[in-house]
Amino acid sequence: MALDNNTNMSLTRKAVKAELLDAETELQLAYAWRDSRDEAALHRLITAYMRLAISMAAKFKRYGAPMNDLVQEAGLGLMKAAEKFDPDRGVRFSTYAVWWIKASVQDYVMRNWSMVRTGSTSSQKSLFFNMRRVQAQLEREAQQTGESLDKHQLNQLIATEVGVPLNDVEMMDGRLSGSDFSLNATQASDEEGREWIDTLEDENSRADLAVEEEHDQGRLADWIGVAMDTLNDREQFIVRQRKLIESPRTLESLGAELSLSKERVRQLEAAAFGKMRKYLEKNAGEVKNFL
Image (cartoon, rainbow, N blue to C red; front, side, top):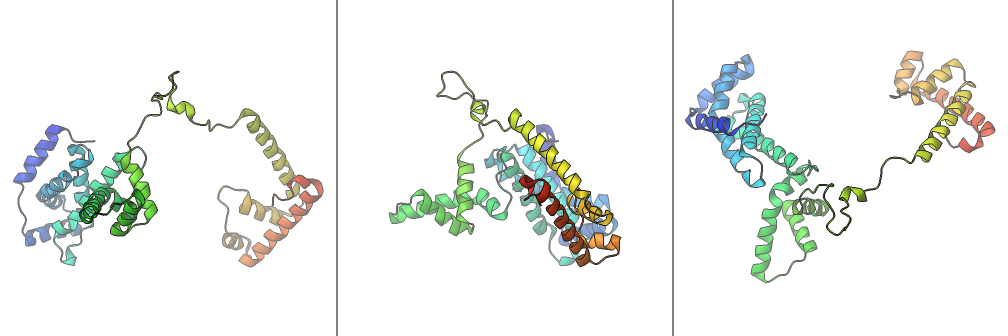
């Protein structure tokens, strides 16, 4: 649940007044939480560095997310840092926590930027938070040297500067250039007031095609059932377990159950398919390529 304004202001005031931990105290608290799961030590550690979390959250206000939500996500990142922090590594908790706080807030911003997921890879994440800054820098440098860059050249320079593929730059440029539109919005050029959703192709199958497909599937199931009757019990068992269940079993697992080697199970499977194929080719030529 997001923080309301009063809760956020109260949290900020508490963070400002929180104690400043020296390295030795911080280390003692970290050990107490890691080794003894001392919740009082955890609370003291989190409270002391909540001002760091709030400060980092404020840096992302320009992306349009509510400050309350940013603070909450920063707090979650701080708690993750406390959970994973290893005091034996000789690193200050604040140094370690910065990474987790930033990652948590960035993930939140990207998740809520658009209903369409903006990206999840490291290159897409780097582009999301750095593309416009790098683009502005490159445009200033080009202007100073009198160069004229078209869109493709600019995207190539951005890809090189950030160290990501060109197609990622082009994709992110499109995502950052537009905003979400409702499919229920009326088309401006349509006098009848049709909505954009009316232009989408119906993904539902046509009734006649659905009936035809169901009929064909039924016939196919009948043919396979008759073909299975040409197999002995062991061959039927192998075929069912390998091809006719939702989660097919491996040759190894069947071999262990049947006290056979993996290669022997494979041979029996191949022989069973050969028998079924021979029957189907003889009695139902139109499905000769099924197996």
